[in-house]
Every structure is written in C-alpha cells, then in structure tokens.
Image (tube, rainbow over all chains, first blue to last red; front, side, top):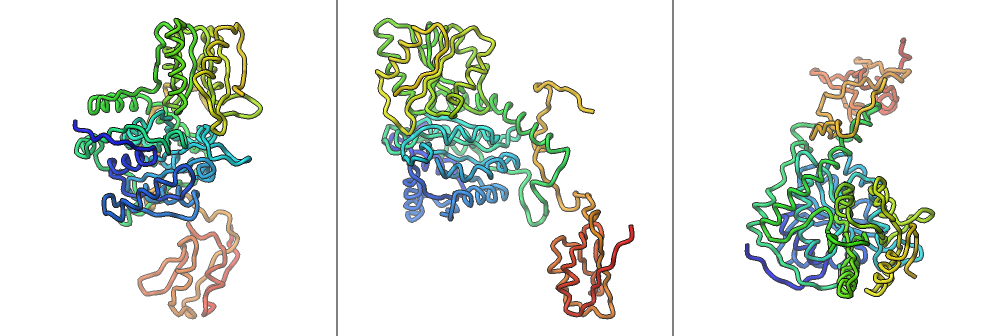
Length: 381
Length: 97
C-alpha cells in the first residue's frame, strides 16, 4: 500500500485520522493542548478538503452531549478534549457507554488544576477508567493516527458497540513533529466501511433511549462489562488486520527486551520512548533489563501482563499519575494482575504535570529495582 | 433469589444490551400515584387543543370529532390541562381507587 510520509504533530495526525475515517460529525471546544486541531479542521473546511458537520460549542459538557446526539442518529462522530475538559464531560461519558455509542474521542492529557499547568500527566485520562469506554494510550503520533482508525473499527463491531478514548500526551505528542505515514484513503475505506447503526434515532420509528429501569439496571451494566471484556479479542483481531494492511504491528501491550530480562518497568504514554532509550543504554552495559508498555488500559490486559512478565523477578510500575492517599493508579492495577505471581512489584511516581524525566532517571529506577528485595514506593524528585 | 454466576458465563447479548424502547413498547402504567383525573366537559370545549399541546405526558388525545380525552395510562394528574383550558372545560375530580 502506498503511504504518504509527512512530518506531523499529534493534533495534525489526529485530524488526518478523522479525515481518513470519514468522520461525519465533530463537535468540539478548545483546550490546550488540543487547540491546534480546531485550527486545522477549520482550515480544511475553508479549503473544502474535509467537510464534516463541524460545531464549536460553548463547553465540553455540550460537546459530548452533542456527540451523543449525533452518534444516536447514526453519524460517525469524533471529538477531542483533555484535562479539565474531559473532567467536565465525565457525567456524559457514562451515558455514551451505557447507550452503547461507538464514538471515538482523543484525550490530550494535561495535569489537573490546581495549581494550573499545561503540561502532561495521566491523571485526567485515568480518572475516566470506570466509565465503560475502551481506553488506549499511545506513544507516538504514528500510533495515534493508526489507533484512531482502528478504534472506530473496534467500537463499531456489533458485539462491542462501546465508545473509545485514546490518550495522547500533551506537548510531547501534540506539539512535537515526528514522521507519520498517512495511509491511502482507498485502503482505509475498505478497512473501515461506513457506519451502519442498527439501533438509531429515526423519525419514522419513534423510540426512547436510556429508558427508566429498576431491577434491570444491573443487566445493562453486566452487558457493558461483558462487551468491554470481549472487545480485547476484537482489538487483537483488528491489530492483526492493520498489520496486514500497513505493516505496522500493535498489540494490547508492547514488550521491549523482555525475553531474558531480570527486572522490568511497566509504563504507559509518550515517556516510554525515554525509558526505552535507558533500557538500550543499560543493555549495552550488560544489564538484563526490559520494559512493558501498556497500550490498552480498559479492558485491562491482565493475562497479557502476567505472560509478558513471566521471567521477570522485580517489576517497577512507573506512574505518571497519582491517586493521592493510595499510590499510582497503574500500580494498583498491575499489582492486582500479578497478585498470584511471586514478584517484587514497586511503584515509582514521575513526571507529574510534565516534570522533565531523562534516560538517567530511568536508569536510577532500574538500579533501585536490582537492589530492592521488598516492594518500595518512591518518587522521582 | 439471586444466584452466583461466574464472569465468563455471562452472555454478551450484543445489541440487546442497548437500553431502548420503540414506540408503544413501554407498557408501564405511570398513573399509579395520581390523586385526581381530568374530566372533560364537551359542552364547554372549544376544540382549541391547548391541553393536548401542554400535556407533558402526551396523555391528552384528540378524537376524530375534534374533542379530546385523557389516556389514563399516561395521565399523572398534574392539573396542567385544567389550568391551561381557556374555556374551563376541564375539571379535576378525585379518582376513586
């Protein structure tokens, strides 16, 4: 397949993904680090390059409500938010999952106020983990573009029918230009056929959605949970199809030098690139270290994590987020997945509010993992 | 009585898991808590259909001859129709249960 090579930042990559997916409706409200996306789509509209139903609304709450409405009529819907914005959407995110609407949203992650910051951490993204959305965390702009297209395919599967939330780190991805290959429109059209909703609003067949229920409420929650669990297989299938189409392979987790590793760190997001560099430099010194990057957060890939970390003795979960009063959020989840394994699982908090981390910092984490016999909870200060 | 079912055995019912109802599928009677019901006096009714327009529960229906009646499956006895009626043709009477 022919691919166009471009140097793109995350916002432009997301815009190209929306265009390639032939999105029909984009309701949106600006927030740093996503503002540039609005600029791009507006320019494309003026040039008649990409013409979705495009509405800039008065708040994020209205944005996600409009997205629910447009998806209910059967239009493929995409939106983009982050940080305080996605927190304002929180209430409607549950509704979108409960009504089983296959929309896709990108979260440009940014630390939460107060104090106010514009730089990334994953508190905003991970705060949404109980909403019932499929949640993916990306590392590069290429992965972001690919993930958006794949997410539409997974979400719109009749067995899944759940919305997807894709994380992009603010600034590190949103404003940094890297090489991105843009697939051909023709092959994407084949990969992702137009959306056909079987249950949608239609004036000829009136219906009500989100009906009041009493005892049946649990049934609908069971169905959301089950569909979310089942979506994991669907994600793997779609990743396989994508590999056949473009040659780029993705999985629910990314294993990096794990085959013979004695210690490993678990990490998500764009800072994994930095951590990977420190793995490579330590490997040159002969130290057997590895890295596991979580791509899928919901459904949580517990089995895959256990399988990937089979030979590892000490695991350091590097969290770019904090649940104050407990620990990093991923730490709790990874620790729960590894509860039957005999491993030392430690927690390292780093980079809150986009605080800079270097290769050397991750080397310190690896050194600490080699030393410790018991689990520790530390911060990279 | 509930029973314990392991997570793997729960069936994914696909589109059945969408909480929706087509027109007429909801057969829950919503009038159980009302105390009063509207009584429409056709001698006074001027067929303006304001009650039909204002009824929040679509309980007021229009007959073929233009007069209205109240669908007691839907009526919650809220008095809005009686308040809005310009001809004072609707009176609320206590419902005998």
